[in-house]
Image 1 (tube, each protein chain N blue to C red):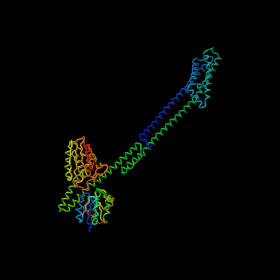
Image 2: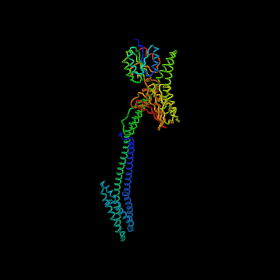
Image 3: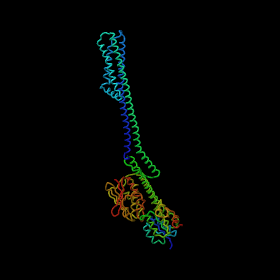
Image 4: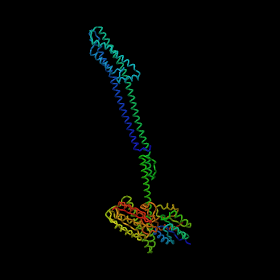
Length: 120
Length: 490
C-alpha cells in the first residue's frame, strides 16, 4: 500500500486548508486534525498509509511534548514528524519535544516540499 | 553592630568629635585658670615681698647712712622707722609663712613640705625676729630722744646694721622661696601641659577610630552594592547582597533587589510578549504567503483563486487588527494613548461596535439591553476600539452561533456594561489574568470559527477604560457563564 498521506495537526483551519491544496499537487492526501487528541484517534486508522506528520507547537489541549511522544508510539519508523511553528525559538522547541525536523512559519511551499518529500 | 543605622553611626561620630572638642576646651579653660592662679600667686606671694624687702632695704640703707657720722649725723628718721615698722607688720601679716592661716601661706607650707625645705620657715621667722629687735630699739630712741651721744650714736648705728642684716636674711629666705615657688610653678605648668597633650592626643585618636569604624561598617557594603549594580548593568545578573538588616544600607539593598527583580520580571514579560506577538504575526502571514503561492501556481483554477483571495482578505484583516492592537498596546504601556474626551452616548457607541463586530463574526448575535442614563464623558474612538475588541474576544471564546448578551445599565452611580460569555473553557483560580496580553488565546474556541481575537482586546479595553477612570473586570457566574464588566463614572 502506498504511503501517500500526511497528517496535518494545526488549530488554524486556513493552514490546514492550504496543506490540503498543496499536498494534493504533490500527489499526497492531507488528513486534518485541529488538535492532538483528534490526531491520535486518526493515527491508528491511517498508520499504514502515512508518510509524514506536520505538527504545530501551540495548540489547545495536550502538551506538545506528550503529543509528540504519543504520535511516535503510533507511527511506523521512517515516517517523518515535522514541527511546524511560528515560534521565534523553533529550534529549541523542536529539541524540547524530541524532533529533529522543523519548519518555521511563514514558510515557502518549496520548503514544505523539502521537509515532506525531500531526501533523508 | 550592623543593626545600628548609618544615621546613628554618623551621629555617634559627630558626638564623639563634639565630646573630644568639649574636653579640649574644658581642659584648656582649666589649664588657663591654673596658670592664671599660679601666676597671680607667684606675683603676689613670691615676687611682691621681694619688692617690699627691696624698698625696706633701701630705707634701712638710708637710715644707716644717716647714722654714720658723729657728731654730724642725724637722729634716726621717724619716717624711716615708721616705714620699716609698716613693712615688717605687713610682711608678718601677709607674707610670713610661719604659723600663717592665709591660704597662700598654707599652700606654700605644703610646697615646702613637698620639697623637704620646712627649715626655711624657721629661718624666715628668725629673720623677722632679728629685724623686730633693733627696730624696737630704734623706735624707742625716736619716740624718746635723749640727746645724741657718741655711745648712743654708735648703738643706733649698730642697730641699723642689725636691721640690714635681718633684712638681708629675709631677702635670702625669700629668694629661696622664689626659687622653690618657681620650680613648683614650672612643675604645675609641665603637668598641665602633659594633661593638655594627653587630652589632645586622645581626641586625635578617638575621632579617627570612630570615623574608621563608621567607614568599616559602611564602605565595604557600599562597594558590594556598587559591584551588584555593575554586574546587573553589564551582565544582567541580580545577586542578593544580604542578609543585611536594620540600617539604611539594608533598606537600599532591599530596594535594589526588589527593583532589579522587577526589571528582570519586566524584561522576561517583554520577551514573552514579543515572542507571542511575533508568533501571532507570523501565523496569518503563513496562510497569506501559502495561499498567494498556491493561487499563482493555479492561475486557471477560479475556485481555488477565489478561496485564496477570501483567505488572504480575512487573514490580512486580522493581521491589520493585530498590528493596530500591538501599536495601541505599546502606546498604552508608554502612557501615550491619544485621549480626547467629549460627551458621548454609550448606547449609540455600543451599537456601532456591535455592527462592526457582526461583520466579522456573522455566526454570533449580540443582543443589547439598555436601562437608564448612558451618556458619559469619554473618547469615542478609544471606547469603540475597546468595545469592539472585547466583543470579538467574547465571541471567539464561545461556541459558534451562540448569542453574546450585552447589558448597558445606567440606573446607578455608574454606567455598567456587561458582556456574558457562556460555554468558554476558562482557567481555574485568578480569572483576571485573562486581562494580560495574549493570555486569552489558549482559551478561545477550538473550532476556530471567525472571529479570531488578536489576544490583546481585553488588555487594551482595560487600559482604555482606566483612562476614563473606569474599570474592567471579569466575573465568574453560575452555569459556567463568565462576564466582562465595564464600569464608567457618570
